[in-house]
Length: 498
Image (cartoon, rainbow, N blue to C red):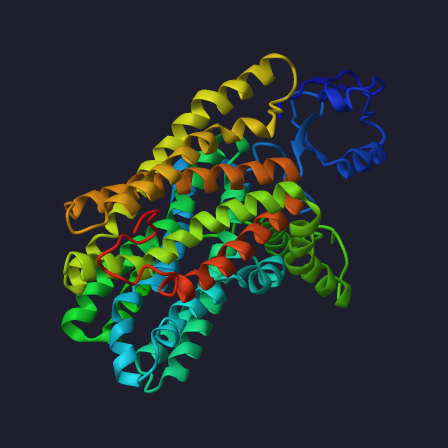
């Protein structure tokens, strides 16, 4: 901190030039009690007597654990070097990719599961649906852990537990154990999806948050698209059990890569600072004990459900994004019917057709970044120029959703009208690109918009409500997709004609 000292003889009073909010303070160098009063305000006076001049005084910041020491506090994740923030953004993204990859990698092997365990197609698809259902409960498990122990613990503990149940799934000898292990794998893998958004909020200011958020949200969309491409060849050449092992092969390097991450949650960082420097810890905000547990349950379960029913914005955004996301999981049944039944692809090649969805998701990320740069960032700069402190109407987040909303019907009608034997197989594959592109554009805009509208705490509940509806509906879609009337292979699925 820049200061200046006006010093004189012993009978003179030295005045200290302070920041604007402390300009009314005067320090008498002959009164030590003033030294105490200033120190209590986060400042400290150190005496440096010399033999050739009167005593000199310097004004310094006092390191505190009550809050950040200022906007440039080096321990604040927003002030970390760019490479460090990028690294900590990729960790939750890779975790999310590994977890959601586990949803769809199973689907190419479910026909073999039907024969081996002598069950119907609906029962054989339950390991997929129950895994997705487990993902819906991530916030319930993640919230109390991240609130008390921090976000880093969630990453380091939840994924190994999920890996153990994936291992159990691969060794299952009956359909019941396969279904239960898959559900528990999804349940223990889901916390990384719940805290990933919070990690990005910790490190990125709102004006830069679109790039980090869209990159992170790519994971839960890209994972299901890549899963069938890997699982198809695994099931074709090694059997259904080998659809589980690629999940473990992915978890191990991702987990190793994450070991270098640091805590990003402000409360935990300040607690660690207090312990390290032996200074008073940050004040406890909110209830403690049983009341704290009740509060967390309210925020993570009761409030999200309540917001679905009483907040039209939350309900309609959640309904819209849930349907869009669920159609991807409906494709897990539709694609084998189309590309195996109509075009006579083998399981491995049929799995590769999902790469069209992956390409559409990848194209959505630069779209979100560019659109936010052109509109939201422009309004942000204008707000600062007008003296509004960077306040921007949340509706400026929705331009990219407006664009993406055209991609959904275009992709679905294109797929429906061209998935027939008379038309080349590449046409329905290309149809999935605009669908996936629009899907992720809409979801990214919805996530940014809900946080901007409701703020950090209620915004987290709004996103939890969105995630709950998204994964519940996605768990249901595969169960009725094959029963929806397009099993006749000489007609087009999802079609408007016979």
